[in-house]
Image (cartoon, rainbow, N blue to C red; front, side):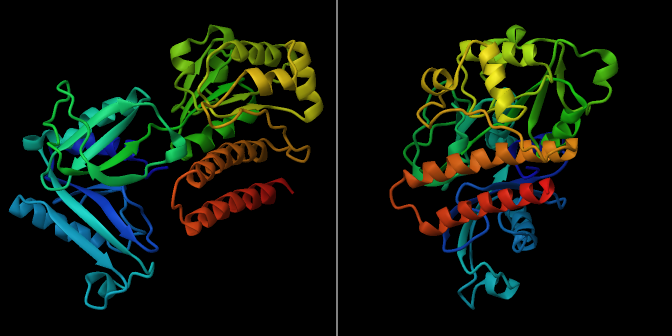
Length: 379
């Protein structure tokens, strides 16, 4: 997830006054393309390229076009059509077979950097935001909103709708805008501090996730074994604040202690959670024992608790017996967590009108790759 817009903004912010910047956005696509409408990246006249608007095929030309935008002080709209032999995309040898329309806007102090510093601040608070980029003028609006990972970062062209007077930028005045949802980083909570969750933390950080580790048994000596990029708390599940739990998108319970696991399950059962995934370490027999110790059963969990909005129910997966090595266990957890996101996104797409079968096939393929990848690490 190094291409997540949060990481791009975090890299860009310290550099924003060291060069002249341009925000690039995919505003329309046709056929097969690498990035869909709503994809964003940042380029500068000093040669910075943060993010991608394709598979790497057009970025060199985009940098050239961005320098023209800076030199002329005017926005520019480009069309890359690999099916048109007179188009630059043909000469670049792009092989995706589709077409993409890309907007390049100056991003500077005069237009408040298109609200990007405020967007980053919003994402740092683990809030999603609805971002609107005007097409005709280099202006942008945004508003905090509820994160919705099932929608990914898909955008669309529509009339401007964010006109709140509390916003720092001018209203869109009914002009056509690119509207896109920008989600914060997925936030993983790990309850437990065994050696088997060390590689899990490492893998999650490599993917660009936020990671919080909580265990009342955690001490300074144990903390040194974990990556520096995580947040480590010497707290039990009962001591976690509701504000933190509302930011969590996945929980893994792995205390290696029946009583502590049961206490965590029982505590989470009483909280109003918005997370889509709860994982419990151990085989099916141990899961049943943990639930019994917590005074719960499968029916109570399925009917009364841990609903994901209107999207379904959380579930407690069990660990394959062959997954003995801690690296393999971590790979399995990461795979299940990511697979869950792909599954929810596919369900959301099926509910939309006019969804393309090609897009559904793509996400079926992604799920299949994860299953193959995880199984290959467990044999």
